Image (cartoon, rainbow, N blue to C red; front, side):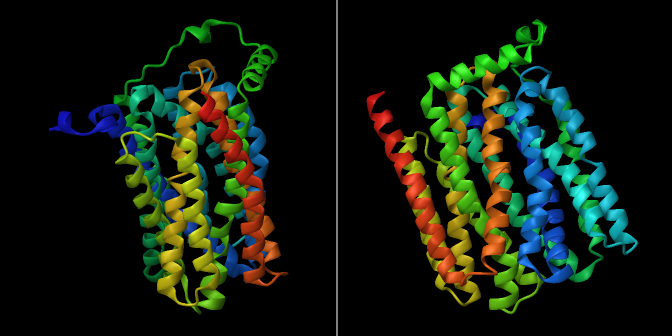
Length: 404
């Protein structure tokens, strides 16, 4: 039966990985939704929520820059197993604190920061790990399924969090996240990889490896342009999600339930986008596909800007989520397909920096700006800025694509 499955699903290792990946990220989204609600309700400040996200994620950009050297040097499967074990501790301690009614902002900040440090290595590692368990011709479709798994968790996690927060103590959300890491850890023992260890017998010289990597980037300008495009899209496009608690509370007059449903709406749209990408066996022009992803995001944001009812809000966040999974998997496969195995970890680290580093910068910017500027004016400014930054990059990449 399994032999009839399409594309990367034919491979047992990928099926195990994607299942464990889904479970671990479902737990992460349950915890993230609960934590965002806790932080916002401490003082009902979107700016403070943006500051929290900035302080817990942006400093880890420096760890992410080093992650590529670690990923390209050590056994990737064993490294993943180690990270999964270490990831158990932050949610366990947070759950214990909340169980005893201890609401300390600095404790939430510290433990979330530690979790982000682990995630800054884990994120690029999982991307590279996929390329070790599926053949190159299935990489884009495997990454689209990985995005679907991530966003299925994004849909289910907030919905479960909303249900749990309505009925059970909020600490349960953190204990569930603690348990969610165990299946993927167990599954890794049955996953076989095609990793080449020959390069790891060489003496490690960070300066030599850095020079080699910088030479590769300077000789392949499209890598730098794609990474810049990713950073800009992340800064402007994904930062919008941080406004959902404020929009739920102030405009929709809603509660944690409505907030969780809107968060799930982003996930639903992202799943639809991922399956749309998975069903496309071939993408004639990846650059044109990235342009279409921008168009979906723009449509969703325009609806979100002028909407005033829950159904229209839900449609808008679905379109925004749809744009995410038609952007990131395509960028990811573009980078991995064109990078050699011994540099792939470093390339994925820069890709993660463009995401992990720019997301909190965008969040803290829009979080404070929305408290100063009119909401609709701010959205128009956001659209204008992403247009003047990203359109020239897409135009250059499209011309380079024609000349290949």
